[in-house]
Length: 260
Image (cartoon, rainbow, N blue to C red):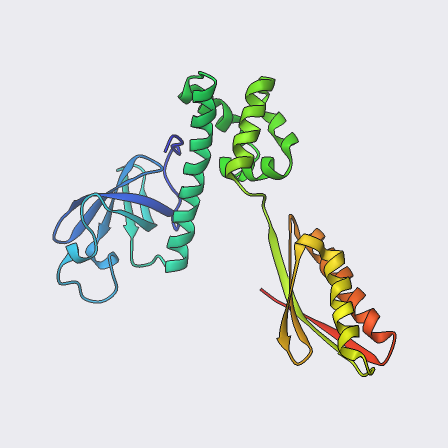
C-alpha cells in the first residue's frame, strides 16, 4: 500500500497485520497501514484452549485484528484476533481491497502519462483526504459526478485520463431500498388490470426498479439509486401509481416497506 497512516492507531480500531513471528505464548505482527510492530497474546488469538498456536497463525499470514491497548511511550501495541467478528473482518478486507484498487488506478494513469508515481499519489492523496475518508470514496463520487475531479487541479489531459480510468474500474455508488406491494382487483379482467398496474410502476422506475411476483397478489419491489432521496422518490411514485390504478375500479392495493 502506498498510503501509510502516521502515528498510532486508536484503541478498538481494526487493523490489517502481517504475522512476522510466532512464539509459544505470543504472536508478533507488523501493522500494514502504520508500519509499526504489535503483539497478540495467545489468550487473544482464539476463544477456548489453544493446543498449538500455529493452527491459527503462521508467519507471513495476513490477519485482521482489533487494537486493545497502546503504550506510546514504549511503542507497544497489543492486539486481539479473537475479538474480531467475521463481518468486521470482511468489511476491513474489503476496505483494503478498495484502496488497493484506487492505488492501481493512480498507478495506471501515472504510467500512461510518464509521471513519477509516488509524487502523483502523494499529490492526489493530500488533496482528497482533506474532504474524503479514502481515495476510493473520492473515486466513487468521480464515477457519478465527474466534476468532483476538479479538486485535484490536474492538467486537462491527465484529469480526463484519470476520469476514464475511474469510470472503467469503479461503479457509481448505489443505495437499495425494498418492500412488498399487494394488488387486488375484483373486476372480471382483474388479472389484466393488475398487470397493467405493475407495468405503470415499472415505467416510472425504469432501470432503477425491479419487481418480482411472489404469489397471491404480492410483489417484491426493489429500487436502486445514487442516494436515498432519489430511491425513496422512485419507490413512492411507482407504488402509488400501481395502487391508484387498481383502486380506480373494483380493486385495492397496499405497500409495506421492508426495513434494512
